[in-house]
Image 1 (cartoon, rainbow, N blue to C red):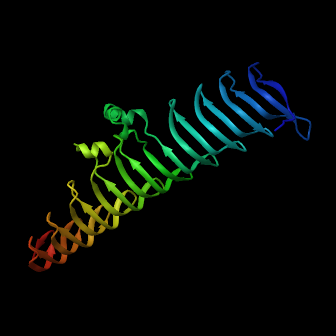
Image 2: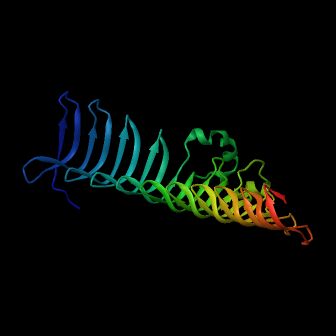
Image 3: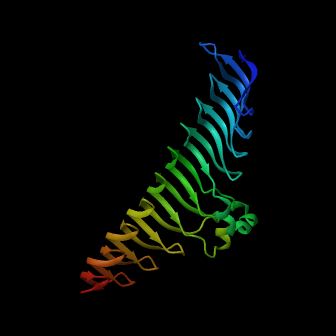
Length: 276
């Protein structure tokens, strides 16, 4: 590919170089940026280096702020568009796809250093815990679509649907690691806590809850993180303990109560977990 441009420099009023690189004449005879070039601020610090087309950033380039790189990747008409990497405090913050200056498409979002600092030794000793904050779909700069989210320790937190940065839709939530077993440490995955539907990070809709030992504890309707509506509570042996109405996790309304052998003990009304 050939460019019809020449190398030039442009200066601020104080004599500091504003632009150095390729230029060409536009239809009015004025010099415009075209080809590879570099832009500086009025203190002489680097702002951008990369490719220009018709006075706009287009192609590959690197953006700087106060001497630190903040973006490296593709541009179209002055906007970050295509594949790129965002930096924060000199560390990679996001890498993936961009559209109209925003994270948009598939990408990976990383925790800041101070967030993962308490788990640094754990993560260093277990390479499988070298996980980002989130990897999956983005729309307009926010998590939206299918994705996987990790705890700062590197253990899997959630896998499923996202909507505007929230867990929303169908997904699977895993217990936060407190004293992980050898198996959990080896896989980076703790026991499943909940599978079902979410709304703005809360359990909301139909779902199932499991104990830390992996035993099904309850299933039914959830509202704002608590069982509310029709549901079933279980004994540790898998036998249904209660089938009926619940409010905020307590038996409330009409339902049937069973013993561990499956024999019905009471059928009728409950209030705040107690039978009438």
